[in-house]
Length: 109
Image: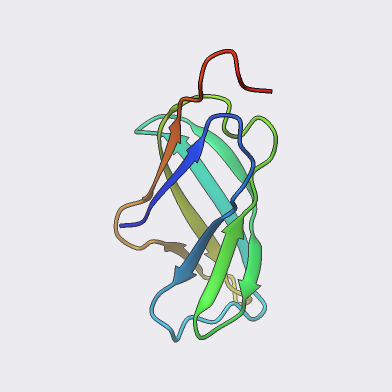
């Protein structure tokens, strides 16, 4: 399981994720990034960036202002809709654990 940590209020680095197995191809596919509070409601659901189409297929979520405003633990995944309409979600087992950590009070921009 991938664990990704970012400070509250940061928009970098992007969350990059390699899709397994290596045989996965994103040719003709559309990918969405989805994140929710642990066991809660969806907070982010928008198109993801395809970094590499295959061997391995790599996707990324680039954070926007507001995405990391609340410190906490989140669950995320990438949802791939293939050109033929079939859908596969990555990771297939569990979630990407996203940790938004507190910043030093009074010093954030």
